[in-house]
Length: 197
Image 1 (cartoon, rainbow, N blue to C red):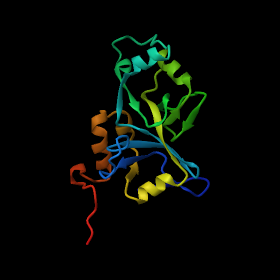
Image 2 (image 1 turned 120 degrees about the horizontal axis):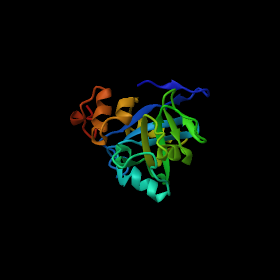
Image 3 (image 1 turned 135 degrees about the vertical axis):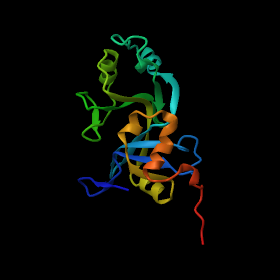
Image 4 (image 1 turned 60 degrees about the vertical axis):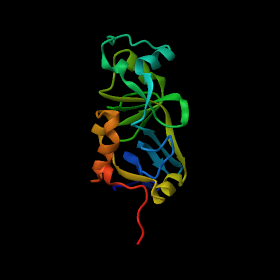
């Protein structure tokens, strides 16, 4: 596990995947892979990257009165599914994207990945100025100060450095297994509780 230290000497899980252990039976977080966008002394936030909604990007744009003006109907962006990013603010859209652009409300996660909450990125997509890599979600996952650390120490999550290919390119149903394999773990070999001698 590679952790970075932020300016306040706190361990940071930003740009890491959180992978739910089999013991996590929660309907929202069970089987989830979460990309951590921010983690500091105030808490953490991330996006579930492997739980799609039944809404397409085109359907989302219809809801918010945006038209995919310069993108033909056959373009795959309109057919892409919007992700269920988590239970916090699940009435708002959030965008993970690369490369980083000039948007009014963006959080730079790495030199290559940003998390944007402002409508201007969706307007750019509608106008045909789509970032090379893009994931749109409704809602996000959030933890208060110390909460995520407690869940990790209670064996609720595994962590591993994020892989951009898994984040943006792999089909959603392959992301959990691929994230586990980053740790050298065969998902079929995991059991829900560790044995005790």
